[in-house]
Image (cartoon, rainbow, N blue to C red; front, side):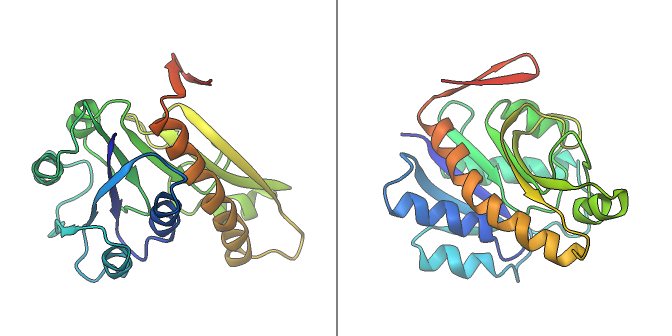
Length: 205
């Protein structure tokens, strides 16, 4: 069985949903660790209550994409046996860009969820981008992490309708509901070995 680590920076609502799905035996994976880069991340207490070990690897002002920081992450992950051979890493509101070295080390083993229908509106403030652009639909995407910003192969997507009276906050709430549905599904597909990457695409068996 694969070992799962989830990386968070805040409350980690997607982390909580994934861990609860595992507890209900819906996902055949072993949740061994939750890592936060902020000691006050509320998700740490949630993870502990759900019986998952936690670690804090503080950023201490180091910018994202920094191997000095990410090498510390690798040390902690390996301590818990989350390796490129038998591990999966889920980013769940982890507010750091991963370094190229980290991504190459765990190639094809890092998932992320983004609050937009990629490739539209990558990066920060996706909901605001969608509102300002006047799109009629937005949503969320679970994708593999590669060395670009939100450019990795897409696994699952969900769509929400945007109304004329929607705000950035109301769009974010709608999207978050869908995130809570598709992220556990994507983890389950990965854990069952049903996702194959072919070029830019994923094929789900």
